[in-house]
Every structure is written in C-alpha cells, then in structure tokens.
Image (cartoon, rainbow, N blue to C red; front, side):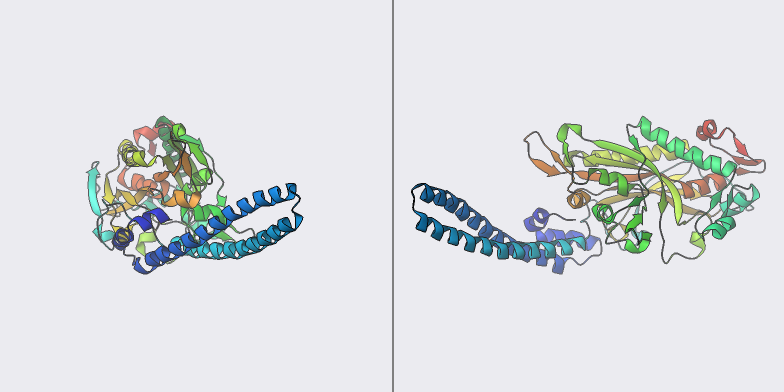
Length: 423
C-alpha cells in the first residue's frame, strides 16, 4: 500500500498519478491526509503523557525515600488518572490507524512516471519485437486440434475429472511440459536465482501482503474451512518469505525462482479466446522474484526483461514486449511489461509473461525492509515476472512448429524431451 510519507509530501501528485490508472483518488487521499493530521495530534498527546508519567514515577520514588507517604499516594492517584486517559487515547489512536489502513488497502499503487496514459489494452505500447514469424499454410491446425491428433493433451478428460480449464497432459505432451519447466528453472539458476519450492496454499496475511487481497478475492480459489487460498502465482508465497523481515543491506538483492501450479477462477471469461490452452483454471508457471534496494530496482527490472526475452529467443518464438498503459495495469504494479508470442494457427498474440516493479507498495504491506549502512531501516522494492507461464508457450510451440511430418521440438528442449519431433 502507499506510504503516508509519499501521500503527505505531495497529495496532489499522488492524485494525478492515480488518475493515469483510471482511479479517482482525490476523496480517499485527502481523507488519509486529514486522518493522519488527527493521528499526529493524538500521538503527541500520548507522547506528552508518557513523558509526564516517567517524571512522576521518578518523583514517587523520591517521595517514598523521603518518607513523604501522603504526597507519594497523591502522585500515584494522578498517575492512575493519566493511565486511564492514556487508555482512551490509545483507543482513539487505534481507531484512526485502522481507518487509514482500510482506506489505503483500497487505493492502488501509483504508476511510475514512464507509464503511458490509456484506458484499455488497445492503448498499450509495443516497445520491442523479435523472432521470425512462422510460415504456415491455410490448413494449419490450432493447438487444440494438434493436441488431439498427436494425443498430447486431453481437454475432455480434464472436464470429466474436474471441469473445464483443467487439461490432462499425456505422453509426449506431458514430457514436453516437464521439459519446459526444467528448461526455465535451469535458465533461472544460471542467471543467479535461488530455486524455492513453495506451498500451493497461503493464508490471508500472505494474500494481503502481495496485494491479491482484498483486490482479487473473486479470482482466487478459497478453502473456506481452513481459510486458505490456492495460489494464483508463486509470487505470493515466495515474496511472503520476506514478510516482517529486516534484511541486512549487504545481503541484497534477493533473487528467487519457483515452479508452481497456479489456480485462477477466471470469473467472467468466455468465448473463443478461452479455447484450448488460451485460458485455464490450473496451469504451470516458473516465476522469478527479486527484493532490491530502491536505487537498484529499475536496473533489476531491465535484467528481468532481458532474461525473459532470452528464453523466448532460445525457444525460437516470435515475440514482442508491451509497455502497459495505466488503465491496463494491475492494482499493485508501478510499471509492467507484458511479453506476447505469436500463435501461428490462431493468428493472434498470446500473453506469456508480465514483468513488474511494485516499488515499495508490496513491501509496505509486507513490512519488508533492509538496514542500510547508516543502521536505519527502509522499505525494499519488490519485483516479479513470469519466466515463463507454460500454457500459451505450449500452444505457440505446437502451432508454429507443425509440419507434414509432425511437430518439431525446439533444439534447446530436445535434451530434456529425448525426442526431436512429435509424430
């Protein structure tokens, strides 16, 4: 969530930047400013009372030593009154702090100055393009037909076992899926990321820490009996490793990667864009997460983008990078770059990664801080990105590499699959 310091330093600038995200922040931001003024006044009264109590404690001790019992008892009565007053003050303080937190949890992160204005995905900016477009004939099959033809994925069996959006990978399809996971993890390891194997369910505090709650509770699977949530991405458990942690400054950056299954309800999704692997309720993904000092986070963001770009190049897929406009960004992100690959038979771009810098927004919720050389603690910057999400990568690989002889496997995956063509 936004820090009080950021809001109090220039509330009008915060309101202006929130407008880039199509969020009207004037009422909540100005309400927070007013509540924080009240909080400071009450806090000063509390501090003043504490100072008086300390003085009176010393005074009572001195009176008792001097044998002035009546005066000491009178002072003790005054102390009791102050403590009762402090209890009322503490209640007021807690109430105001709760109001401030409730408002801040409803306010999205402010976008970075480099975020373009815009309302929808149509306003995103293509920043970079690479890779060769596949040369496919008019008879090219979409991946769901290829999956059936070569017995790679059974969508109907997934419906039988669970429901729509839960495919079953079979034989070479399962091996290709596993090859992609291992390839992505190996590449992350080469880039200096420490592998984590996280839980797939998290508690409410973890969801709040990374911003999935209260914004996206409708998209998360909720285990109501235990009050746990199935993770929508490994970002949630991995970033929460650093919740309520003060990291030594010389121990930064923290670079982690994790493979996990991901679970998303995708409420409201329908139509041709959800067919096959295009949009699932359960899918596999390798995530990269970084905890950085603020002054280093944007250099780290560029490194993460280069890492994802390198994966797509090694897979020989045509790709482009989008700089998301304010209206298409997530609630928690300060800036986001989406990577999309070309799906040859569907003749459309498919999103396969989002790489984001959250600046201090998540860290403030998480209380994720580092201690600098001056011994002072400051909030970290958190970043994450998909490296990569598998379903649409699989879709593009199957479609773009189809030939009359079968589906060619990219060279970089052949040592993992043990075969170079699916036929």
